Length: 560
Image 1 (cartoon, one colour):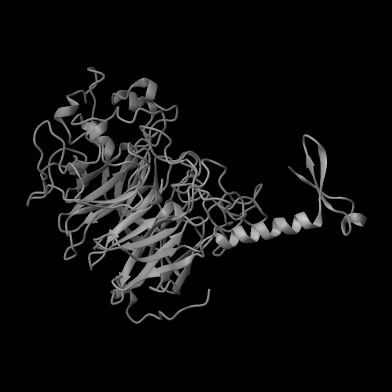
Image 2 (image 1 turned 135 degrees about the vertical axis):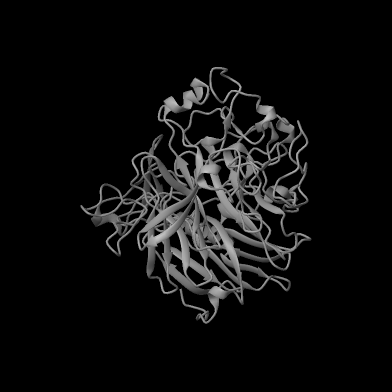
């Protein structure tokens, strides 16, 4: 109901009134206004104070790095939740950030002027490197009308960087590869690829290795095509007709990680409900084929887990991953070394929509290959360890999020849709908990945070997602993930994580309801979070107190 104000001369003494579509004007007494104000203040006071919530003995001591989405800042906090260092960028994150051993900040960022791939939530397009003091040392764009970085990056031991990117395939190429015509998007498909980039200058880089998923396809729908074959007999290939939706973003890969000991890469493919391992020891030519590399399989899939129906080795009952993010190996010398952890978001999970952090033991051989019985699914059939809340439905993020094993055996978790960071023991006790206090700020001139300023900016200013400083344009742009349609496939059973509900550890809440908009404080937090939640974070990283990148740095608490 829009409010109606009386004339200026009467405003100081007239009761507040508003228009009611059914009855015209309704007057509210001063007492009612006061009561409403008290009620609002009470509700506000009941919301959890953000920042540090828990810090118990047994937490792994170190510093936690995170980049709030839809903002330009990155923060390093101590175990008390106090900021010890911050960086400012000209670009919003997209979406991951790392502190390197030399103290520089490696950051995926937004480049939103691509005419084909545009500004969808996970869209990135650039990688930047900042010094400890915030000086930009590298601004590399990986974006043309044929490819565009999105979601995640991974620093390599040799100083290079892995990027996930969309790889444009025309409708004609899709048809030639055996995709069913009714599922070919009008504008083609964007299967994923992984590239390794070496910095060559302050704004340039060289792609020194590349793997394309499109080089590893099979299908059994069209005998006239070259890649026709028995899908069940070739689990090392992608069936081009899985995920039968006519949207370009076919795989929606949202995470990439590297294992130096195996020289392998793991990719989380949300829309496929599985994680996939490939060989990095190949040349680019070998990666396009089926032989070569340490494992002798070229660029074919070495291991896949989470949804064996994708290669006809199971059905819906055998599915284990639901909208997952951030698959990575546990590091050498850490408890569980060599195992794989993944944040299993749980959107569409058959027994209810709740999240878990799952740890699996992959069946890897000494030569880097993986054991698989013919006609069977890759092991394991179940996770070796999982974290869920005691009341499962209380731990849920329907999108983004991540987890990493710490040296003491604890696991650091980012419940991304709620901006919540948890550290849990192997016994699942929460020993550290922090709620991101940074809120998405309104764009200059008003408008929804992250949507850019209303109307066109002045000539010469950049697109939403960028801002001034080094002449790069205005602040704005979509959130790091989720502008436009939510990512991932339609849930196999039910609501896809969009039912309403409480903030973390809250009550049941009402179902549905509009997400918070603009710079208004959220009245409710959707169960599982939403892209409009004001505190979302893609992932967090914990660095030990003796980490090389922190040596000699000023880590005193800063005012913020």
